Image 1 (spheres, helix red, strand yellow):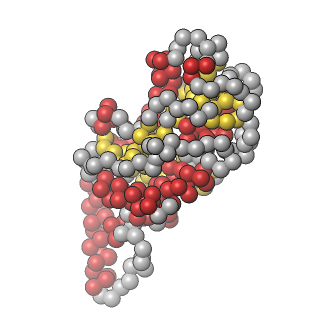
Image 2 (cartoon, rainbow, N blue to C red; image 1 turned 90 degrees about the horizontal axis):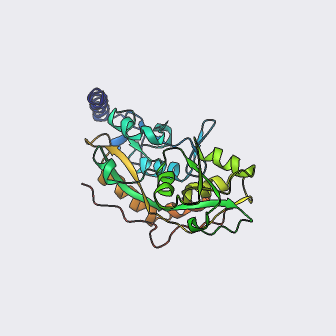
Image 3 (spheres, rainbow, N blue to C red; image 1 turned 135 degrees about the vertical axis):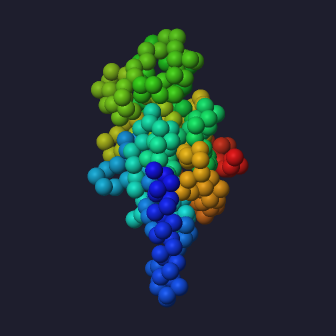
Length: 281
């Protein structure tokens, strides 16, 4: 499938060159010519406010803003992006099966994942934290004894609690973090745990604003990378890293963080962010 798609792109590129030789104008003055002739398929989360969220036909969140910036630098303006839902458990398969060209979906870079896919980035370093009611005195995972904590089923956040903080903690697993927050609104749980930027996004929604706070005591490092096929595909790791570096240097990265955590008492870890991208393998 991937070879067929690239062959079609090559034919389109030859046709475009022929028209150009005859005096035709592509009409594009910005971005790389690499993106000419087709859309780029980008995997994101659809259910994480402030990170990756679909609202009708609109896509919002920090991951989305970084994806749009990078895609534009690669020659794909917003009208040539196709956003595709990539649930956590399906991300590697979707890259291997050529369902997406790259993934921006709170995707932590790990050695295990590198066995089957490649990564560009990182573009953010998150840390597992707690979201609690605004009047809560919980200050970290060590203070969860006798408390009910919610996370998502089969998530790395839930597993870390099981591995390191299981004693005395009643862990409730739900299909989504939104369901965890709903349970906390109802008073049946005391805290929600996942990466700090995801928690900040949940707290920043109109329905939740002022009701919850991010504790600000992270207990992991999650390096968010851009998932890519192991075999080089439509875009390269080097070009993505160049775009991420430019986004940091021109201030757009910082603006994206501020916009997507507005109204929440949240500060990213300035010792780790903005991160420097890794060397591409």
